[in-house]
Image 1 (cartoon, protein in one colour):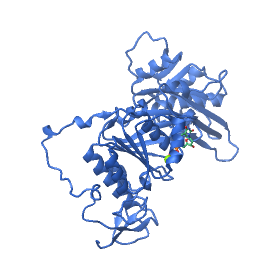
Image 2 (cartoon, rainbow, N blue to C red):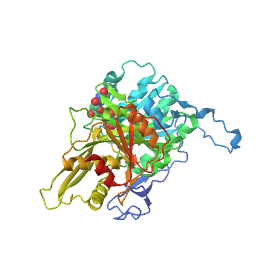
Image 3 (cartoon, rainbow, N blue to C red):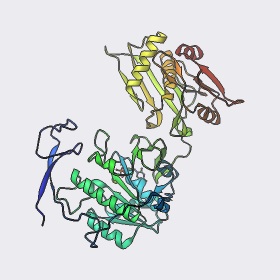
Image 4 (cartoon, rainbow, N blue to C red):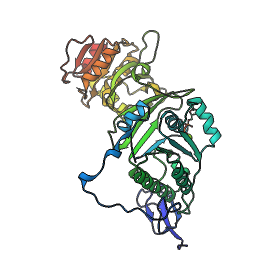
Length: 452
Ligand code: TYD
Ligand code: MG
């Protein structure tokens, strides 16, 4: 037996220290350093328990490297495939993070049940019967999905060796533990070790592995930051628990772009792919209401029409409240300051609430103009025509700035039956003969003139 060796790890950032200290010198967090036993055996290979002998990789000429194994597996889920960059690459490790209860297990179980590849779904969180009950709600008939409830990596690899699955799903990485490390499951050194073993397994056998990861209260994947560096792809599953929409996005992707987005709707029978999100993100209503404006945004390469709602009311307390859901609060303050300075609005004594419908978060700056329009509409208590939409960024001096791919936004708005789209005067467009009126504005004053 090797000598027991201990090291101190910061539980927040994963930095390693020789002795205990109160504050982590790397991430500056207090009381996050804990002692963990690391017991390094001679061979910490994923196969050492079941088979002696390690494989040694040799240098190869780049032209001689066989890329046929890089073929992608079709996951029978268009949204997931697109976010991954066109399917799952063989031998890749994908980490899916998200808040508890958002639907991570449901999403991956659903994929496991729908694909035609032999899949092993390893759960350390639920019993086989619980998983079966969930599976019955989603897709009761699957011939190629195997469920294993196990948390010890060595046992998992033993099962993998006899079953030879084509895809492995682990729910979740925080529940796994390896015999080579003594500290408890979910600790930094366990997560690191288990991930390393899984990476070796995935790369050597060209089997793709999907991992579920818990997140901490501030939204980061629990465990060391290094976990995100180790895997090939980091996906984030997000959405408002109280809303039915869920958004899947890639934070890191070694095999594709990170600006694709997948949208799902949570139903009683699992997650449904939403192939035309614009239609459902615009709420149905009778008549026109003040404070609503539609933005022609772009998420990844997909146009997405999103409704922005604003409520401007007289402040009850001395300091007016500003609150934004699905939109950056700092940016809201900036837009309010611009309206105050450039358009003479006295919003200083008003509470302003902003909400993006559907519980999704938008980063596209093209939403700015719709935010301005919604605030103006609520402030004046004057409804905007419901077939108006907006796509432009607002600059600090009140100028309306062009946004990328404006033609794609115009075509999407036209397709959905909007009559007018407001864009920047400086946007370059070459499409002609559109049914939709393209209204070009250059300053915030222009938009006020058009709308009032
Ligand atoms: P789950 O996948 O367990 O979340 P996570 O693994 O991210 O913690 O999702 C649980 C929620 O999803 C649960 O609150 C119920 C809901 N749900 C449905 O609405 N419909 C369904 O068909 C299933 C399986 C779950
Ligand atoms: Mg779960």
